[in-house]
Length: 325
Image (tube, rainbow, N blue to C red; front, side):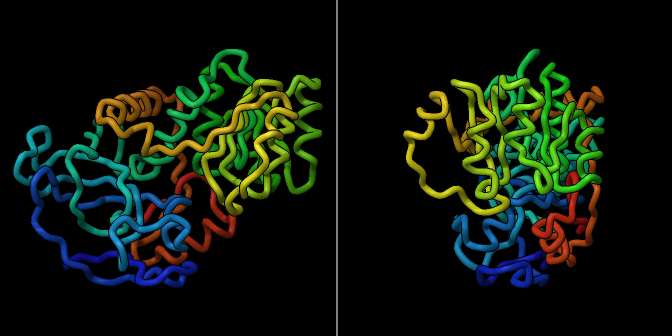
């Protein structure tokens, strides 16, 4: 039996239950890992609330990201061995001291990347990698708006977009968070609670607007985000921190400049193992080079997962949060 955090019914942070769970020996194509750190992400709250259905039914161990050491290898696994340092993004099972994983979803960690860095960046960092390089290719001269720029994805995205040569406009909810976003590489930061972010974007860009908006907030920033885009611009909705965007009349995209709108998810961008490895390698390279740093600003004991969710949903966190088993 190992310590884990399970969900027996959907609801708020109070439904996260710290308890002991069994972990079997690894089966065909599986490895067992001893976890050194577990990532905490907004997607974890979506599964907890029932916004996303659990693929394993109820109850389930929460969490979708982590890093640790391989302790057992199942039949058919050839590219991992006991003692390997690995990280992963896999739906559910993350908030646990030990766990089983499909070997093909594990990525070996380079020596330059710590367990805590990996647990704080695999989901968020690989999300930024595909958003900036594949969903919309950011480069020199790109003007992008990044909502929640002081958040976990936001800080990584600001650094990475700046590194690629973009002009980065961020939004933040407080002066303190605005300062964090600026340190992360945002050239301009809009205090969305105090300022009309559409008007500020028009002012900053002298009316030319943005090539792309990256929006992990959802309901509260839609449809205003569309008014920040130039004709043929891209609206990229990758999260729903304030609630989901409801169905809308697609003709508004035409009326606002023949805009593109997409709702991507990491799972589809790394479904093939070669894409998973390439995405992770690019992330590791950027972090190892110093172009991107991973701010682990909140650490909690595994038993305090409820507090981690309360802080995350209360907008009380910046950067990445991790749990330590």
